[in-house]
Amino acid sequence: MSLYIMFGLLAFAVTGAILFVSFYPTFGASQPDVKIEKFYQTGHYSDGVFVNQIPTSLDMSFSKSLSILKDFASGTPHSKPEKPLPVIPVDSLTIASKNDSLLRLTWFGHSAFLLEIAGKNILLDPMFGDVPAPHPWLGSKRFTEGLPIEIEKLPFIDAVLFSHDHYDHLDYGSILKLKDKVGHFFVPLGVGAHLLKWGVDSARISEHDWWSEASFDNLKFVCTPARHFSGRGILDRNATLWASWVIQSVDHTIYFSGDSGYGPHFKEIGEKYGPFDFAMMECGQYDLRWENIHMLPEQTAQAAVDLQAKRMMPIHWGAFILALHPWKDPVERVTKKAQELNMAITVPQIGEQINLDNPQVIKMEWWVSLK
Image (cartoon, rainbow, N blue to C red; front, top):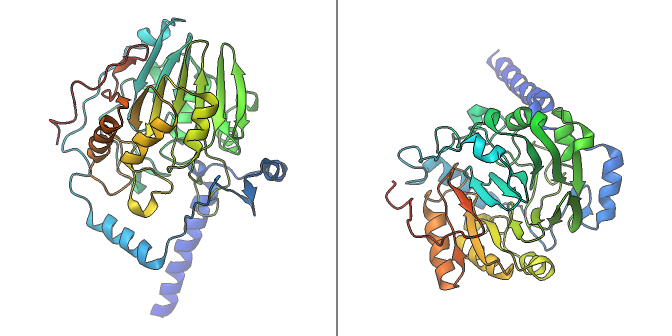
């Protein structure tokens, strides 16, 4: 009898998991066959999945997987701040009063930004949720209490750019709140299916392949390569494309790395679209066991050099626990390496509005006094 009960409970759990993944909206949508046929024409879609420019294995040996599980279970000292990180509030009126000559950036933590450029309000990877997971019970909470400005108080957003569909970049709850105040969404191939399922009109979604250029009034967006992977469910790994973005106005060129391991694509992008006035570079959630998809801080600084960036900012840190390093490790290591390479670096506080025409090199290391 106990054996029957055990198998019954197991079947119930498996059925529940299947139903959860199949119907819970945060997992997004699968790709229609007509789009998959077009994916094969890109040259980097093979055997039903997108692939990187250079070989990038995601396979984990049993021993490596076991060591990762053991380390996550043990925890990492200082993996999160002892107290919530300070947040500088942003007044919605300062954003609403558009200025064609203003070039300003506001960091929300992790990889989420508001870029004000050429009179346009552009959001980059606006993950504004509390937990980067399909359900709040499945992840750790944000390092801050609240955001510099809540979604409801944001003025009209001209465009949103997404780098890929992972939960710490593409957030279901954020889309529901943003979708009616955004002019257009620019996403890598396949990511639009998620937005459609969540109620965004297809006319306001543009999907792009690597090296695809899009004109947006007085701006140009270029979808450029990254070295990463994608997926929101159990069986959809690499079903959508991942990317970085180049943002060009008449006077400025900005780079947003998304997530990426180090590779030759940085130099290639720099040669085609550099030099860059400012580069937001992934620097966080890394480990030697998966450095091919998340750069180490020293590689981040070198990648900025490869891009021909005049100044860089480390991103993908300061918000969530997604790896096994201390929370301050990314910024400490990348600033040291940037100084060695003579790469100018800016690290604003969360919510601090920085003028990219004249961003200051780090003078006050705001994180040093925090534990």
